Image (cartoon, rainbow, N blue to C red; front, side):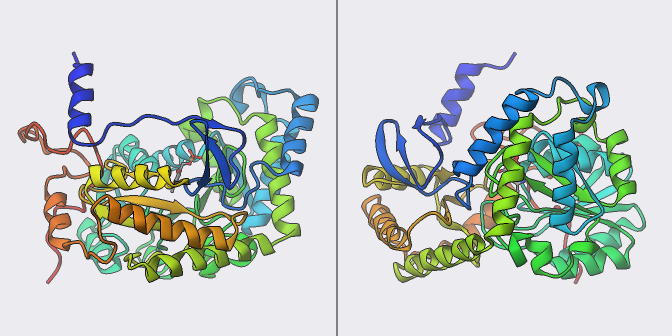
Length: 437
Ligand SMILES: Cc1ncc(COP(=O)(O)O)c(C=O)c1O
């Protein structure tokens, strides 16, 4: 039996204990957090649409018209008209034949990957992909080759090793904790050359990148080359739920094979209607996307001026990597005391020794308050004992990686990791296979 108390104590000792904080009111640029007003710098409500009056009204009207719940899986009690309309809108937005709604981004990734890869296949997954992708890979029971972050050469080498067993490549479009962007044209090229499917998770690209906020694939001009684009409704589109944009044959297959679609209640009508109103707003006023980009640029510039190394982040997600988990928590608390809420992110959300503050800029922030927050965070970092100009020793991260089991779990017969090693914290290490010379 699992010793719950011992596990909690172990997490606490590693500086990895978690609790949720109480927010009063909607997820705007400012919130009351545990009763105190703060600037919110960690919400994925990037375009400020979650509490937009038109989005609220659309959700409220939908509740009156169609009710609050969808009642059952769509394969059981049917597709509601609001689902069909939203799917048509999302397909047009993403420039694809069709789209299929899922209950959340987590469910979409888990369902799509497990439907497209089978035992005996090989899935190629970026080292820093989101947990829902990792879990989709696990669910598929395929073999998983974790390639080094953004490393197309490592991926190409892995594909060669798979010798025809390869099934698909899967990547975040914009990486959720790092704010960098996948090399999509190169991934498309590899996928075509080796006859692999490519799945791109646009959770953080939708509404933020590309023309009209159509995403990282659109920004790279490869939207139509990607087999399945997964997008969420719960981030820039201010609602809840997700979708897979693809061709009709793929959608028909997913309806038959994606277990998270088949065995889960359909999206609630108010969530669908809220997302549709957000899409309307995005299409009517695409300048929100430009505002998000200019706010993010201002934030990054001020943080760089303070000396932070932003590690190639070039989107609205800005990581301030400090290494140690407890240090990240101390900085978070010190900034919070000054009215700035930037959540500390620790393993297993990020690899060991790369704990960080993950800042998320919104279009509804004012540029000046972002600049001022950057200065506050730098002061908080110094007060907590971290000089922003510090460059972390990459060797420390490398050795931390060696502690991690491979994505498919420890090999049979391998002894369990030593007590106190960073577990059950199952972030994934790159494939433990040497590179080609
Ligand atoms: C890259 C990525 N994909 C998928 C998800 C899951 O989306 P959802 O929150 O809709 O379940 C997230 C959530 O943070 C994410 O960052």
